Structure formats: C-alpha cells, structure tokens
Image (spheres, rainbow, N blue to C red):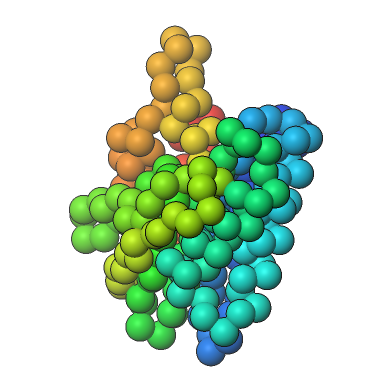
Length: 192
C-alpha cells in the first residue's frame, strides 16, 4: 500500500511501483532538491530515467542507480541533486535487492526489530561516475517495509517538535493489519 501526499500542489517527490518480468516488482522513491515546478520537472525526468533503465536487460539496483545517476547529472542544473531509494523485490523468495542513494533510510520491521536500509551511496547528480553498493535483505511473512520521504519525519506539531524517525518506527510497530490499514494508521498518527 502506498500514499503520495505532496505538501504543495506540485513538488519534487517521486514514487513509483513497476511490475517486472518473472513476477518481480521494482520500487522507487525519490526526492529532488527544491520545490515547485522546477523540482517537479526534475522528478519527472528522474521517473523517466528509472523507467527507461528498467527496460534494459540488467535491472540490478546498483547498475540501475548508477545509470540513472549519470542521466540525472547530465540533465540537472549544477548544484541540484536528488535522493533515491530503488529496490527490486522477488516475491517468491522475499529477497529485496536495493540501493539507497542518499534517501531517508526505509525501515524494515521484522520480528520486533527495526533495520534501516541505508546501503548504497551518494545522492544523484553530484558527479557522473558515482558507484553504488548493493544492499540485500529478506522480507518474511508479517514483515513491514516503511519507505518514506523527508516530509514525514520533518513534519512538526503545534509545539514545533519534529515527528522524527523514532516516532515513525514506534507508530509502525503499533499498527497492525493488512498493508492499507497499517498505512492509514500511520498517516493518522503522523497527522495527529
């Protein structure tokens, strides 16, 4: 289950779920520096770059992200960058191969513990030849992957306190049920 709720009508956040061959699924979550129309245009370029790379024969996350980085670097104005979490899930085995290019670390809640998926490298657009370290984990029945953008953890309440990763983790641990119910429970806590 996923939800995309930009703070403004248009911005630089990017979310995509793409079915791949052999039943695999790609997940991309990114955030382009800046706000408004310029950030939205770069987010559209980022989406197109990821989708184009998924048409290639090698959808391994480290290779996809390295190629996307080069494309993003070529089209972005100097000094602009984007974060990207890109993963490929093999549902039959639960294997999740991923690369985190400077994005907020998604949380894998498993058996009462929480692991941050941070393996990868630097944000996109800083240079054409960045290398990215591949990460891999396994999702078992009942595990929950919480991928999010900075707007969630940087949201502040009426006292000026940030929501933060710790509170997000605790809210995800308390939530139960199917993915859509869990998502709405988290959104309720975030907005509460």
